[in-house]
Image 1: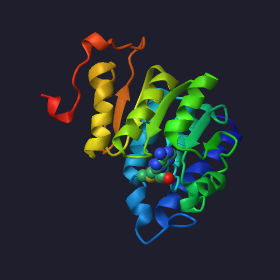
Image 2: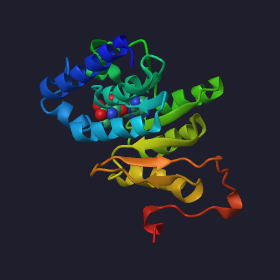
Image 3: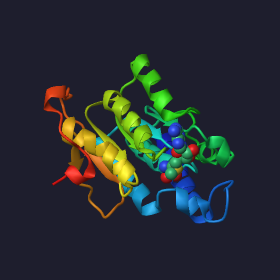
Length: 225
Ligand SMILES: C[S@@+](CC[C@H](N)C(=O)[O-])C[C@H]1O[C@@H](n2cnc3c(N)ncnc32)[C@H](O)[C@@H]1O
């Protein structure tokens, strides 16, 4: 790793530590940062998942205060320096007074990050039309079933065959049911994560599976057997 990338990596790590210890530049209410952000240990799991992929391009839904974004960026910089791209989508960053983007600026990684201030189920199809391809995605935006489901519909096209989709909050039936469709009908396989974490990672099939309507399998949580 060349000197300037080591410096950048140290800056990202320092900003991650600072954010975790001192909190964001703005918070909506007491305890909101801790409630909304993934915990630091899960952020480390996310970093290690992206690192193991050697992913160069990642799409994230849900920036909030930037904890997960910085974890992803740490993995990107570690492997690729500035030859990487992290695209973050968040429709409501103004509710956070841009605290998530401030963390990205403070970490010095605006060169490799871009931000789409749109609802993800409207932004992701545009990326498909632009022909974007990513190695991995992290989904932690809307937790409403049909919005998560639509996010995953488009991420199935955006993440390359054999790539990884990681989700937070599969403890919520709405999120767990949305991803269950892709497990049961589209060949996504649960990737065993090494440590105890609330994140779930799914490996996409390679080649991509195109499900037929004749072979549709019921996918509600009660249908898990
Ligand atoms: C749980 S927070 C994300 C926390 C973040 N991953 C972290 O660990 O720091 C959810 C975020 O998703 C955003 N969001 C909610 N619904 C959305 C939608 N339909 N499209 C895009 N972003 C959305 C919210 O503005 C919020 O920032």
